[in-house]
Amino acid sequence: MNALALSVGDPSGIGPEIAITAFLAREAVGLPAFYLLADPALIASRASHLGVSVPIVETTPAQTAQVFVDSLPVVSLAARFIDSPGRPNPANAAGTIEAIDRAVAACLAGDAAAMVTCPIAKKPLYDAGFRFPGHTEYLAHLAARHGGVEVTPVMMLAGPDLRTVPVTIHIALAEVPKSLTTELIVATARITATDLASRFGIARPRLAIAGLNPHAGEGGSMGQEDERVVRPAVDILRAEGIDAFGPLPADTLFHARARAGYDVALCMYHDQALIPAKALAFDEAVNVTLGLPFIRTSPDHGTAFDIAGKGIARPDSLIAALKLARRLADIDNKAAAA
Image (cartoon, rainbow, N blue to C red; front, side, top):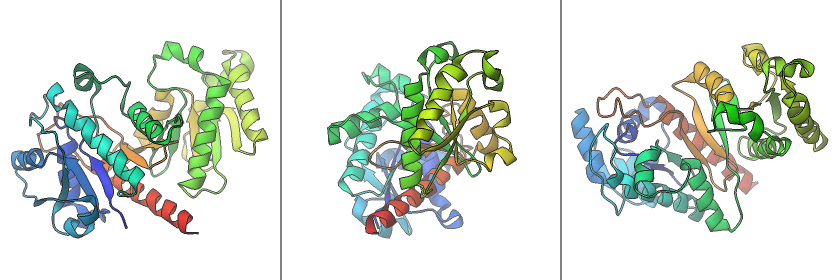
């Protein structure tokens, strides 16, 4: 059984230390085997900085399972890192990107079961010449370059009690009504339904479609988008056999009784999806990228430069991301063997 590939993220953030603390808790939390793509010297330095003892073994993906029993498996990068907790450095960009590249390559070659990514920060990458809007877009680029077909990634926040998908993501709220289209909602919902069925094992996923405006527009009296943009998308999806319903008022969509009626909530903008997901499971929510030819999960938080190196970063979301990646990989393997 192939292990998980964990990219270290921005080494000036909390990625290295949550990888270390997650590994140290492996037996207590039942962590699946993973290898860390990183500079071994950086990991040793950060462990020393934190005052923890962790055996580190440079290894290969194939040897991860046997090493993981008593040592942190690290697959060494060609690039080297400057260890500067809390102080991002463009000089670390090459290693940050190399870790992502090699995790993707391992997944596509069948050498890793799935990839989990520690957080990156955009500015040090931009300062070093990185030209992609963010992590997810870069993963889509790598997937398209490998397969020769354009890939549309979809972000899903998955917690123990709620899954949400934002249809529009990192744009200003004022731009959402102009960017939201029936076609975008339909495309996002199709990918979501497909991956929930194939990777999460939900035979007929139920998609609750949130309205854009208060009270889902209340019949057009609070904006026309819900009737002119969202409702036609729901009609198209239902005609295709997808169990979608809405538009639904977002203010009543996330209480426990409502959540029992659907498998995922498609939300029209970033905060409509992320606020309930983080409010319900701030330390346990996982960012899952749907629509890729490999499994990718990530902790649902950023680099946290303000606390990096202080020994107070919690590994809970990374642990949840590793466990979910393993579960999705196992479902994939079972489906392939059937």
